[in-house]
Structures are given as C-alpha cells and as structure tokens.
Length: 470
Image 1 (cartoon, rainbow, N blue to C red):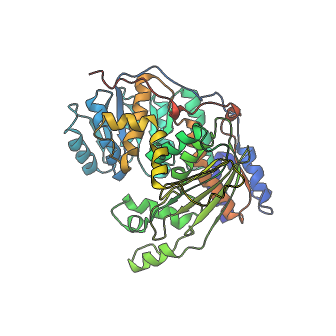
Image 2 (image 1 turned 60 degrees about the vertical axis):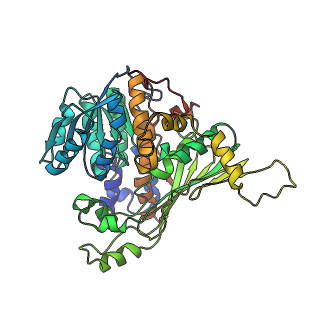
C-alpha cells in the first residue's frame, strides 16, 4: 500500500480514484495509462489572454519570509512611479508582517492592512475588495490552494515556484484560470536574467539556427539553509528531501529553455525519463550538524531527460546536496551556434567544412555579440531605475517591473497559466519515473492542443510604457 499512497500523492486523489490498486500493482506500464487517463480537455484558451489596463495595480502579499521580503523591495520604484501600491500583507508570524510594514513605510505613504497569527488569516487578505493582484511567496504545497482561492475571489495571482505540486493541482489551476478569466503567473525570475535574455534574443534573431538540444539545472548547495532551524520555517524544505525523490526545482533551468524552444507556442514536451543518484552529502552533513533529521530519500543528483514533440532534447539536473559553485548550466545547442553558461561562453560555427571550430569566442568577440543582442528590456531598465541590480543581480526587479507594466497596459503576461503548469508538472512526473526504474512517462497536454499554434513569445515584445507619466 505504500506504492499506492505514493502514486496517489503525485497524481492527486481525483485523478487516482478511478484506478483500483490491482490495475497497476503488477505492471509499471499501467502508470503511463493512468497519466493519460488523468488528462482532461481544457475549457478555454488563455494564450494571449489580457484584461483591461489597471492604472495602479493594488497588491496583496502572502508570505513575508526570505522570498516575500525580497520581492516587496522590488516594488519601490513602481510604487514611487505610481504604477503599483502594496495594500495588504500577511504571514503566519506577526513579527514578519510588522517588520515588512515598517520597511514599506519608508517609501509608501499608504499603510497596508495586515494579517497574521493564524493559518487562515491569508484568506481575509484574499477577500479584500481593493486588491487586483495576489503575490504568493509561501511554502510550495500552499501555492496551488492559495492561487485557486485568490482567483475564485476575483484576484489575479502571481505565485512563487513551483506553482503546482501534483498533476491534479495542475489541472485545477488551469480550470480555475479559464473559468474565472484571471491571470495566473508563476514568478520564474531566471527568465528575466540578463544572460538568459541575451541568449533568447540571439535565438530569436537566428544566430543559433535550428535548436536541437539544451541543458538546464538547479545546482545550488542548500545544505546550510535546509538544515537551519531558522531559514525555512519548520524546516519545510528539508522535509521534502526526507519523503520524496525526483527533481523538486525544475523551473529555474526549464523556464528559460522553454522560451528558447517555443514550448507552448509551436512545440511541447512529449515524454521524459528520470533517475536519481544515491544520497550521501546531505545525510553526512546532517549528522555533523547533529540535526534531528539524518535520513533522506532524495538522491544527491537527479537527471531528467525530456523530449519535445519536434524532436529536441532537454537535460534537466537538480542537486542541492553537494558542495559546489552555483550553476544553472544554461547550455543551448543549435545548427549554427552553442552557448554554455557559468561562465557564459559562446561558439559560432562557420558554414565551411574546412573550419574546425574548437574554441569559444574570445572576450572581444563575445562582448560584441552581447552588446548587439542585449535584450531591449535590459537596456531600458538600466536607464530608468536605480533598482535595476536589486534582487538576484537584477532579475527580480525586471520580473516584477514587467508583470506590473503588462497589467498597467492591459497586455498578455510573459508567462501564462499553461507555462506555469507545464514547468511545474515535471516534478511529479520525474518522481514517477524515478520510482519506476526510469520508466518513460508521457507528458499531459495541458493546452488542449493549442501548443501547436506558432505564436511569438510575449517576452520579446517591446512595451509602450508609462515611465515618464509623472
């Protein structure tokens, strides 16, 4: 019955209910059938979805830990420019709400309403009539229920990653967004990093030719943070590693890659296979630190291979146990060029059989491409905001700026509900594959076939702006 509980936890109760234990206990291939049967058609099409412009976006923030506090600071320029206003704050801990409100008072005149001290206080915030956008920065398993509750109460929602926890979560988010006609965006900041936008702009301008392969990752030594009793409330992030095995943090690598490959806009994921290494590093560190938790199910390194419907391949890796320099890899391979990140390097192939290209571009050549193909958004924000380099080197501010400006102007958001769900769904699918000896797992079509429509990436649009309205 442990196996039954595991599969139910990933698919979700509603997707699992119609399948008796006997139907899959004998043969892993029945897991594939379960996923295919768990899929259901969409009831609308939110690609290109937009609402009337909101001159000043009124924001409520749920969760004021490390991430929520950082994102609150990203609003300073937008508040001062009268594009947004923080009208409500909520967290379980009263001291966090109080501190956030004090910091906000340094650059916003309006005093926000505050909610704290109970597990359901956030619902009072979501019910406020004067909120346009909910910003959700809570532990992972709360993202979907909070997003759904917010949309059902008339709010657009922006959730930290991952937005979904199970396949049923994924479908419920899509159904709610399509029914309520509300924006539902996952805040994937790495899509707004200067390097990723530079690479994307080169791809869009044909520098790479036709893409064949890409690699992304979240390789980040988080042992000290996860084992700390202070950094993550009740060590919630560590507990995932005790109970689960797969790729828990897909979107930092996969979000930019999905833009590179036009996923959802002419191509989509077809299937994946995943495997994890043995676990050593986290448990050894936990024992040295005399942690209360010393045994972990999640392997040190998870590697997930994804194939798209058009035959491109993606290698996605996840390791937060191992001491190493941070990397998202950010490798892109095309018929004309190759890029490797960390450090960023570029190779341009010459269309000559006699050319043996075994060297990256030198620094001057690389800088010439970087200057020529700098994404217009980066150049613009460098000139208008002193906050440009705040928040993970600037990408947090770029992300929040772009979200608010699209809402101001009544334009489709760069990341829609289908993007958000597809990037998150890799996690439960990777767990199923790992548990089934790297069985190939089909990827559900969350778009109702609309991925086949070749659309331009929203993030490549240049916005007419209200920056100088004051």
